[in-house]
Length: 458
View 1 (cartoon, rainbow, N blue to C red):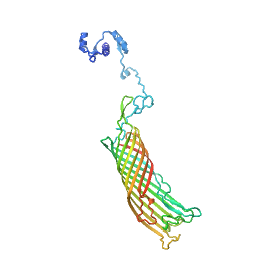
View 2 (view 1 turned 135 degrees about the vertical axis):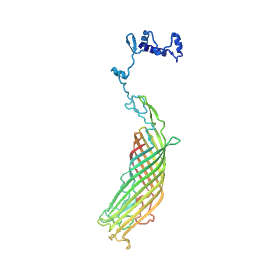
View 3 (view 1 turned 135 degrees about the horizontal axis):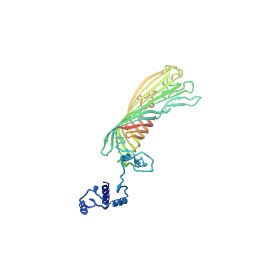
View 4 (view 1 turned 30 degrees about the vertical axis):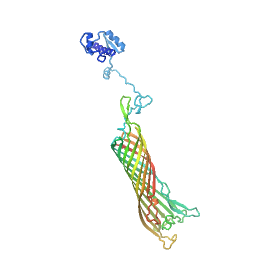
């Protein structure tokens, strides 16, 4: 049996070297004619000369061992055979490989141990039909419109002092931005299309301030209304303001896709797809509704005097609704594990502004004496006004994110927001009751701050 096996193997080697057989053009009938015998399958062909077999083994350096008069080639043992014979098969040494997608082959310059993992654009970046994000926003608001509220006349202690609405800055206010969108497929140019809803707001700014007269004598007066009872010749002026911002958007987004994925071979011989780096431009078109509401309070008091005897309360409340069309764009640098970019939107709008004012003032102390004997000592009235005019809402976002899983990432950024064409509370003063339609819709507010949150798709 061993003799037949060895003979067959040598015949295969000789036929391969000499180019015989079907590929070399020599037919089996020719071989049979030369040896003058019947065709025998090559695996059972006998080689009579054992010395030639031994010489052939030495020429081709085939390992073998002698068993009696026969030379048997050594066949590598399988794992099972090795275990049966208690032989140890050494494991091949592990070579250092790079985990970078661009270096899929064996590279000794890097010391990473992990294998490259697949990060294709088809299953790594927003592979679901729905997507959403939740962000915490922390914004600062610009100061109030500058208006002089109080004044202290010149005395021996110093010159005239003015107190204005441009006082202390606001603290940062916390809010939220929530996005919910759905992919509606690709267009004929292979661009992604989305429909999304964005809620943006919840921020509420509050500020308080106040002034005291320099002497115990009530000397504070207000230029807003020299003859208003309860607001002049006071010891203290106190102000408070609150402002909020909310916005809702419905947008259509058209976004460029990444190019073809790269095919990278891992050290184990497997091929994997990796996304190409690139800049993705997008177009945003939609509609936006924005709300900015403010409340302002101005209070006048004398030390040790009841408000029912001397005091003044002036309250202003404004409401602004802006309805406009949104046009914007974004540019995102997309990488396998991270991204960064900027997004800008502009919304020319119609501004629907309104305000309500309430004035309650009383002075029955007889100090100072009325300039006119018939001058009233109390004032209690309300007024309301509204206006429709042009408005504008614009924002700019700088952001970046890190992909944690194929459908989840953490993100952070810095935002700027500008709202114009609104009725801010500190532009609506009508304490002297001179204006018949007391509303001013020419105000503007500037916001800026940081954002951080997460986004994902499913």
